Figure 1 (spheres, helix red, strand yellow):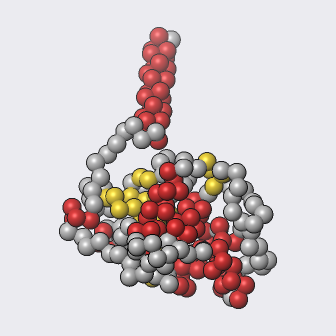
Figure 2 (cartoon, helix red, strand yellow):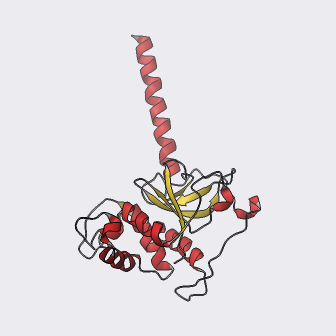
Figure 3 (cartoon, rainbow, N blue to C red):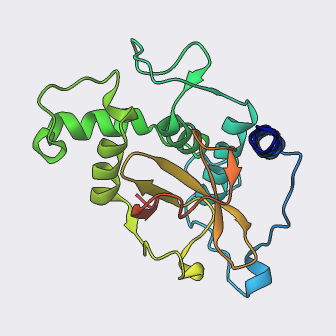
Length: 214
């Protein structure tokens, strides 16, 4: 009996430590050294476009927009909204994308609504719904496949990944950060992970990698 109690106490202690580590990580108390393109001799690619004419190129605007979005510490919940945009502080992963693109001067909702209306079959949608279609990962992927630049999905090709790129998974989507790990793999900025900006590029299977050049 004493042995069982001893092991029980050890298991409880382990769980407490494990949960504490997760909490500290999520609260950004635990920090890891990050790197940049310069550390690996990678040239930083800037967009030739400045859609919103603010003096900052599109890719940098997209990166800054993603960071601005997550700096608000959005809560996570998948809900339906009349008009399409969340109004109560609850968001999902796709909301990072339209917000980041809006920061660069692009209206993703309008662009996708128009494309879905004119090419519904491309999206395999039975009933068009502008209130939600632009917030679905699978629909955004179809739009990016049609109009954005496609890049390698191989995370080991670190020079192919640039800040402001969009990475798509089967059920998730994120913006590529300008921070990198010691191996050169980029962080992602997203909503729905342990942290808003983290080393999580390969935690899910990558199905698409795009650069917004329309």
